Length: 204
Image (cartoon, rainbow, N blue to C red):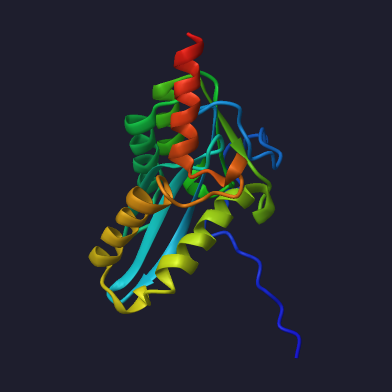
């Protein structure tokens, strides 16, 4: 029997009346320097005491998860918190491209107002219901669920426990240690970043 693999579906819902942005990424999920191109999305995780929603932001330069937030809801404030987290920890370069889908959270007044406050940010959006326009973000969520959520059967755990596990997985494994096939020599994200920063210091 042939088993077809399901394509990932978008968790966010499109608001067709909200202002739309062009796709500035066009499936090029690479960047020549940190803080120049971020991609973002949300995913749903089932827990014993309800659903947990994770909004994450990934830097296309090295694949590092630079910002994230977890809440029992998927309102626009969740995405805003993830962006604030990214900026407070890693910052960004002027002219940053911030890519997402057309979900109502990313087209909301709250989210757009936040980006306007920071200034010099170009908001980019893929096509509606096209997971391939944000494929690298989808790949990250697939890795998270395969290596952590499903393997440890998080559906039987409470949200607070799952939240702490995701935090540790990102901070102590994925960013600093896990080999990333999108990087040269499959370097872990933060290893690539440190080498790049060191090279920039030597040039200066």
